[in-house]
View 1 (cartoon, rainbow, N blue to C red):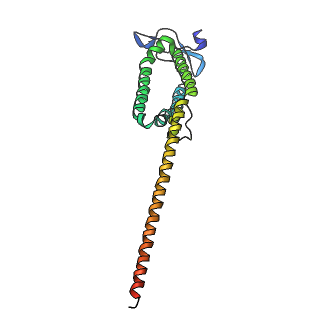
View 2: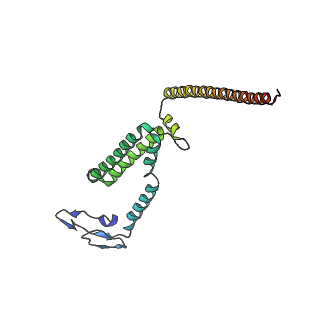
View 3: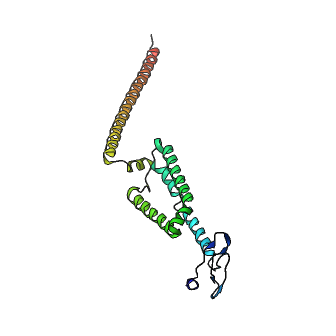
Length: 208
């Protein structure tokens, strides 16, 4: 049965360089079985390395920078530093927990079980993000903050902004009216000075 499924046998805890018992199938020739004291040879040894490199490459250009980009967009200016600090701490704490517990977890539920647990957590996170995290593509930073507010808060902000725009427009119109009035006064004064100059010149040219 061991030869049929090509199982590698466990190592001897007292002698890590030797198997407890049995032999393994030769990966290059399935009809030949050799005694393996260290490990079972296989022609697929390079596959984990290839998949790891592919994973790291696509992860680095995809999901790895995504949280840092969202951090720069989600938080308002008054809470951006605190929010980025907390999210960064949560990220590194989660990485630390996974690094510290992976070996223990893999021994408790096997490596397959550990990765199934991680896959389940990823699915839950995907559902949470799909439902609760809004799309920010094409929106300015000022509008992103409104996406996380309730409807009542949005109405209040819209009313306050409308009132502010009304006040600003009234102030602008008042300034324009004052400036136009000042320009009118200045033009009248200039015309008065010119008329006085013409009158004085005419009077000076009169013969006695």
